[in-house]
Amino acid sequence: MTPEELADRLERAATRIGLAIARGVQHTGTLGQARIRGNASGRPGPNVITGAYRNSWQAHTRRIPYGAVCTLGTDLPYGRRLEFGFTGTDSLGRSYNQPPFPHVQPALPFIGETLMAQMRLAVAEVLL
Image 1 (cartoon, one colour):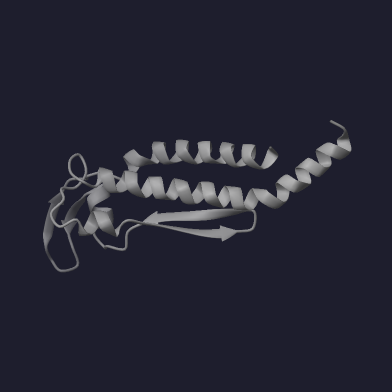
Image 2 (cartoon, one colour):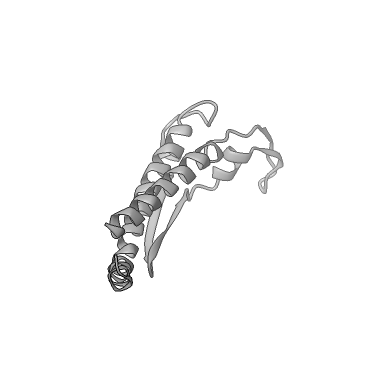
């Protein structure tokens, strides 16, 4: 391959990499959301009573130049208490001694490995 051919190949890849990365980030977000929801479906995570907390976990992906950003989270106020536990008195004067029920932290290694695999696939896709 000549330097000119390599330059053309890299130029074509540069125009396609953003979309490939965005697809990988969105897929990782979907799988991460599913893993967190699964971890929040009983011990060692929180017990499921209504499923509202588990279903509150959302993945929001947005495009940026040459890539994407995905945010995983819940808008329920007791999410941090379930993940990290809480001991003390809340703003309403109620006393708690709630142990942590981790469900996000155990999903992080899987999410990181999935993201790395998706980025390898994105680079391979645009360089072919």
